[in-house]
Image 1 (tube, rainbow, N blue to C red):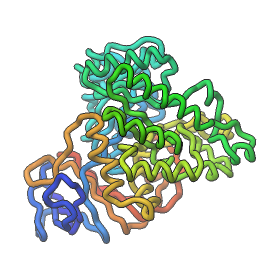
Image 2 (tube, rainbow, N blue to C red):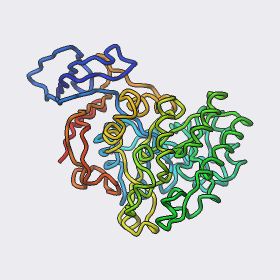
Image 3 (tube, one colour):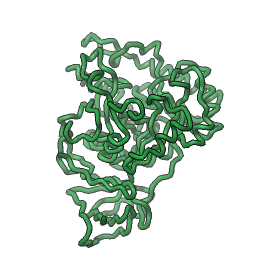
Image 4 (cartoon, one colour):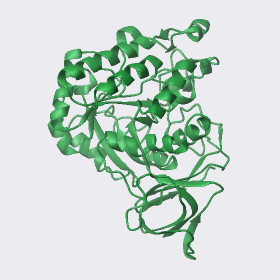
Length: 424
């Protein structure tokens, strides 16, 4: 089928059409024509009030469900949710059951038959069973298709282990993705340690739990070399530490969860368990520092931190609820709407599209005639409501259920798999 995107402003610095308003004709999964005005009577027309076109988004550190947790998310629902949010590629964390730690595990994810055209990039386990004791077979895992090494949001407490991981991952040609968290300092914490945690009577997680582990990682990195991505940082002091480290080393990178750019600990006043996430939501000062870190290039990428959870572990009193929220469908709209006064649209898109691919040494799609269509089409002036009914994800643990947005993904092109999205 033919699809005609009408009057979309292309935002992709790698394209000769960057910042130009064009019509785009896609046929059989390929960009056939790009021009000021196109007329195709047999095409399905995609239009909007303030339409933009970028390459498809890539998410680093997506939590899937399949295998092992299909009651939370299958590969089919995961990739449908991805397409609904403009994502055409996912780098999936290894925290499945079984853990992604063998060539067969990597192949299962990489060539899954129900990926709906979304490119799947497996991230292999840093340690066996994600227990933080022994490293896995990095060479075999990378040869099978793993793009990075990580234990997901489980921080490695053993300093010797993280050092060995950096050494072996470097020789295998991939980065270590590590979430900095000293569990001895954050243990049983439920929210950011501060005035709000005291007033709500909840145990707090101090920012030094993140800061101390980050500083340890940087010291080990300096000693062993390698390449590390500090995943989902949340604190202002972490941004300052990374700024100093990046001024000396080119092999230090960082990501941030979009939730930490939009919410703070003050939003927990009504004990909404869908705002109980990892990393915890911190102060307004931390939030603003993270935004500034993105603008200055200290933080390289924004992630959805998508973590599907079932009702049995999420719809509980705040203290007992598991941490995590889904985010693939709402990341782009929430960021554009929520950061309109803080960040340029081009900066937001770069942190969601080209930068994540660069971190993982993956090819960046092009927006030119004759190439596979890898596109996200979104409208900045299209009111819609995110609901459980319209959500493509199997789980519904999101603080945005019932919330209104102005920015809406209207279509996602993943080669021959084309999805025209409409809120229900």
